[in-house]
Amino acid sequence: MSKEIHSETTLNILDKMDEFLKLYDEIANYQKGVINHQSDMDKELADVYHIIEGVVPKHISQSHKIFLHLKNVLNRRRMSKLPTQLVQMFIDNLGPKIEVIRTRHKSLMDKHQMVLDQIDENQDIHKVFKSLDIK
Image (spheres, rainbow, N blue to C red):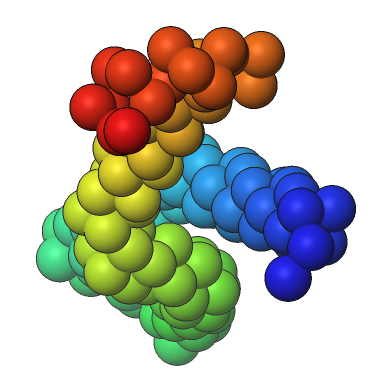
């Protein structure tokens, strides 16, 4: 493999890794919002339950209005539940691995740079032989 192809491949891999980590961060940023929204929906549902517990409807139409309101809250809660579960599943399964990837990535890049910094293509070959004790 030529050096040019290797460099291009390396750059492509690094770009894709960077894209992936940015997408992970984007999805992780949804976590707080979807959990707060789910919590708000649960509170609203609890409020409706408390209303039902404390009210004695005098007409069927009153019961029907409460039923329709409860159904509306339950439907909205159901719609907010899936994003919460998706984000939580994503974070629970990838979160610890992402941190390992970030740590290893930095370590590899630092080591690679250190090796590149140590390489001096303009070294005197005789000095190299001498330092390596090559005769």
